[in-house]
Length: 230
Length: 230
Image (cartoon, rainbow over all chains, first blue to last red; front, side):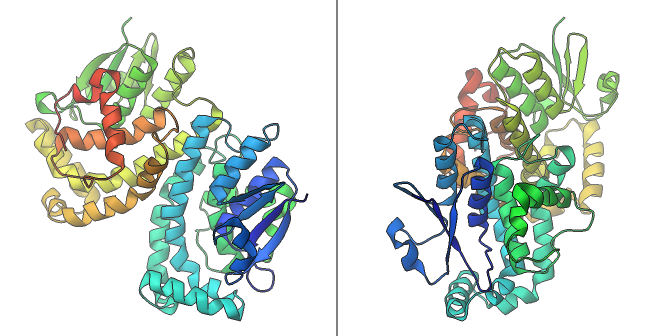
């Protein structure tokens, strides 16, 4: 039975969910084949079988796993003979810190910089849902967020300080080679580059060469979808 | 030859440097004996032999190691048969992210909340040095920072979001058991509790039970110096 990854989809082939990118890269790292099944914001019935409403959802044989972290743990524990995503229990624990930092700080800082661009890449029937839920969350219109973009970019730069320092010291977040921690953080940048032309980083930012190295991995997987070069 | 840890000292036995606490706990984790040598801000001649001006400095046999990260790597690579501080190359890489997050974000957010309290615990001859260098860094007086403390505490709470989420999910930053990543972050909280009565955390914060567990380790090492209970 083929593995299926249900992932968020916009119009014209846009695949921008940062969580789904974590899973795409984790599957590629493990060398595990998968079929991608696009799923728009308002197509929640497609994943109703998973008992919840969010992508990514992976079906693997008789198993259904929702949530990118749970999927990464499933892949690590099921495909033990493949390249490790964590590499041991301590690494798994520390990678979860990277996961929670990305969720609570990095993506929260990045979202207001790109959120109006995301809207642009949604099918018309998804735009109403997206605008309503996000404007409720922020307490203002997406256009108002966009108008303050320069201040959000400045805050993003502050949030990125530890990543910037780290990538001056070592080539990958996970040390000498890439692992799941790298893909978690990369997912946030891929989210942006799939929807927005905004420049998030200065030209000489040490984060750039690390991004380029991940883009090139797995035969250019991150470049295989429509995106902007920024 | 006895190992010596040169560490920052204030008046009345105050030992508040977050970097020195990382090293104290790393040494205890490895079960490696050491003699503590107090070194005030203006006693830089005591560590001139290390070729630089900052503590911690560890002398171990014929070796002199400065910088808390370099010391942790030295301990891990020298005392391989003892409990691991990292547990492998991937963990070492990921722990460096925790290190850089603590340096650039956590301690930067915590510093303005406690900096006037630090001044109070310095010997008179160190107070001038400390005030001059810190007021130059911040571009305002320490009293002005103190006056804005409520806003700095709010920012600290935002910076702590990933740690709070992590410690709801798992008992230690390093996963199932404590390792160097835990001591790095603990060092920041120990810095505060050695000098200040300010409450940094709400009573029900999930960070609190983790702090309590580290305080109890190594026969209560973190409680063996003058401190506040907050």
